[in-house]
Amino acid sequence: MTDRALVVVRAGALTTVQDQGRPGHAHLGVPRSGALDAPAAALVNRLVGNPPEAALLETTLNGCDVRPRSAVTVALGGAPCPVSVDGRPVAWGAPVRVPAGALLSVGTAVSGVRSYVGVSGGVTVEPVLGSRSTDLLSGLGPPPLTDGMVLPLGRPIGPHARVDVVPQPRPPVELVLRVMLGPRDDWFTAAAVHTLTTHTYRVSSASNRIGLRTEGPALERALPGELPSEGMVLGAIQVPPDGRPVVFLADHPTTGGYPVIAVTHPADLPATAQAVPGTPVRFVAVRNRTR
Amino acid sequence: MRALPVGDRALLVEVSTDEEAQALHADLLRRRSEGSLSVREIVPAARTVLLDGIDDPARLAAQLTTSKLPSALPRAAEVVEIPVRYDGPDLADVAEHWDVSPDEVARIHAAAEFRVAFCGFAPGFGYLTGLPARYGVPRHATPRTTVPAGSVGLAGPYTGVYPRSSPGGWQLIGTTDAVLWDHARVPAALLSPGTPVRFVPVGSR
Image 1 (cartoon, helix red, strand yellow):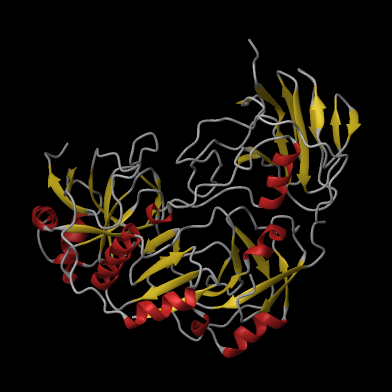
Image 2 (cartoon, chains in turn red, purple):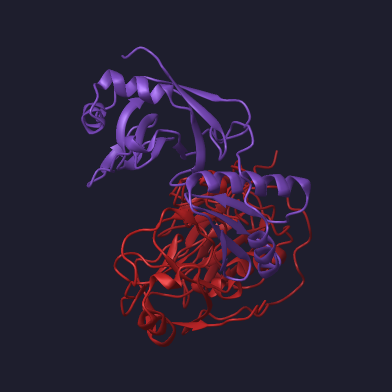
């Protein structure tokens, strides 16, 4: 009997199981969740021959070490990092064979924040509402990885991609986020809207899977108080009482009472997953449909 | 009614009252099930309904704002009954706020016909309307660090039941053994927007 599983040897700072998330349940208070850098996750799945919905590992800054109980093909994407198998360096961004019992070490990100570890067959923990993603806001899905944890793997489906290495976007040196103002930009002064779209903010170290927090000039409100709770979208830029904009990421709450001054273009969100604290952030107002 | 663009794939439709928001939500669900509305998420809230994942927000906005708001709520499905012991730590404070006895709080609360206006805060946490406006209560200025699962609380115009233990600022008037959220169950949420609810008093512990 093959024992298809990954043993977690070193969980790292924060490693979670992620897939495409569980959209469609926001009306029940369930966040969408899912891989923050979705294109990177899709790419490593393709490299190991998985369908796009297969679950994989999302690391944070310092990688993780895992030992597969049977031979698997893995691929790394997202934040570039050193990778080794039983101490021997192997390629990042390409399919790599890991023999049964060998140690796959995913090192500290050279740049960026989150590396994605795709494994042939995918991680097959029990899905919750159709998704295996860990949701750090509501606690749905598997808990973050801990040392010694054993993750079940599925049967490999397709052959891995026949490539040496594939180009991947570099983690951003500066985040430029196209934003559409509203729905609550009228809750802010004209000066605040101007500040948002002309000043450079910086990524705060308090950022997480729920939101990209920023440091920079506070945005002044034209209207005091809180809104009655209203629905929130991915990429919404909510402004809490401290006046510093927060960009809502995959684990964001489904409703909220702080006004949303603008909404980030979806195509600009994957880069937020890779912006280290201190990265400059510029919000650029766009008007038209730019999809 | 106004429809505010939220990025280029969503609309926030805003109305004036809780009742209008619930009627609009019911109407949008009907349109979606009939196939005349294509949208990924319909998220009702206090005075708004968010339509997320739509192709042409501008066209839908024009359509919505020229159509008439449905006047009445459709008669909803089966009533969910939630057994409750009116033994919460804030029962006496709420009684004082309402200027009635604690027993009377239980009687008034159990006599009301509730409806889930919207969900949020945590999976399966419903904001229930149905108490007359004069029975609104403020939240605690400092939230409790832990509110046990099954606690029945009041805040503003709403009643809510904590699906699991969490921090919370609502005024707790009772406890239920009902399971509000169980992701192994279908459906996972006992309460979803539009569900009619009654609280049924059971003997105190």
